Image 1 (cartoon, rainbow, N blue to C red):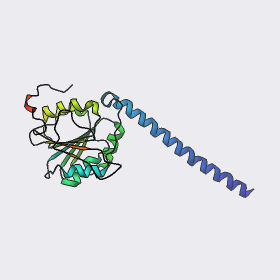
Image 2: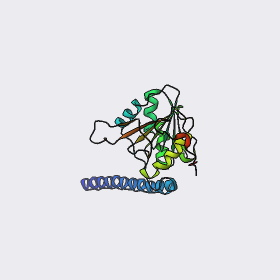
Image 3: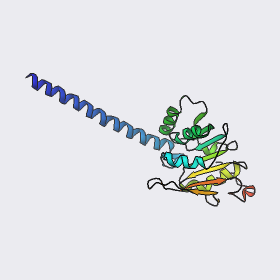
Image 4: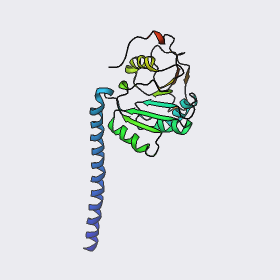
Length: 208
């Protein structure tokens, strides 16, 4: 009887563990769906994707910065690019994110560093004139509009890093790739005004 009771107790413990794991997974799925719904008006359903560190380092090496300069990541996800830029150059980092889960992760991961600020804000409504470097990993369907915004706001000497997708009509100063089969997507580096010869003729304000 004692052995049978121990067996039943063991089974109950395992059932509790299994139901806890399944329940946690279900809650995470619901939070994931909630994040998509909340962010949908801006992201059109696109979820954030963490950029591989090997690609981040490759990009940062191409945009040498001095400490105190401003690095901005539009659609910063969990803040990985911001953290790497801060460690790489000692710069001030600002990130903008509208996905609530990604935003909370970025806040948690950057706690304690007063030089990294993450804002729960639509970057389309943010003035980027102070940015020395702007980084993005956005879908192709918004890149043309993004190009208008950056051309309108960025000052000469600013640089742009675009992971995976080019800005239509812009001429990259370099297109980088890392030596990795898994992370060999292109990284586009743009300089203002060299990458946009017609910058001063832009007369369309892209802000909504």
